[in-house]
Length: 344
Image (spheres, rainbow, N blue to C red):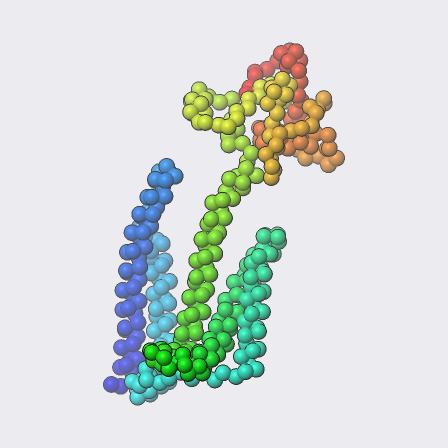
């Protein structure tokens, strides 16, 4: 067989195998996406009307991307084949890979591998303590250094481990160990890269599982920090009241208020009976004395006496409702004398 025919055969084989694997992958992926998607929506009681497991634009982009990779791989293989003779190609599987283990160089490479791996893990650990921009940089540093460090450690230490095990004749010549060590030494470079890749994939899988479990365990705390109340409704309709009545809440708070052209007046008796919650790490209610004068939910520097009330009313009364109004908490007799429609 001539070299150009072998090259053409390899090119066609790469494209055909790639297209076949892509077709199988898309079929399995669509099936899993449909099954898992329906199961998840059933668990969440979510209709998901716009969800489509078979989405043509995404499949087209996937096909274009992987087809480009297959073509690039075929071209690289063709270039590599053009540099070797047909005889070398035929006997390529019979050639043993030899790795020279040099003491000082091995120590240096292993040291840099451990150093890079340490930098990678340290960067990922300290991400939570940095601002978002620095955290993004630390993530990139962690991913690159941890990956390179893993390959360096396996590339430097794996051949040393194989040689050390082979040097022990009692173990290396026992049973099938001689055959096993011969096979390991036959393709030691490829095995080193495979083991490093498997280690990285295992770490990614373990990290994904850990992140998922942490997210599951922290979601309630995160939700409480972002929104202390499950629902805040002003002037609920009859339908909304029916829906709220069917939900089992731990606690329901109701406040009456009136609005004029300057202030939002809340009834003091309601506020005293059901003190509003503070949004933060701990679930607690306002402990400050009820303010006598008016205050704004807009943050004003120097507001110390009404700090908790400002924070509490921000969760009860959104800024967009009465952006330029101040709040007053008044007693029943004053409240009854106010004109305007009562709201809750």
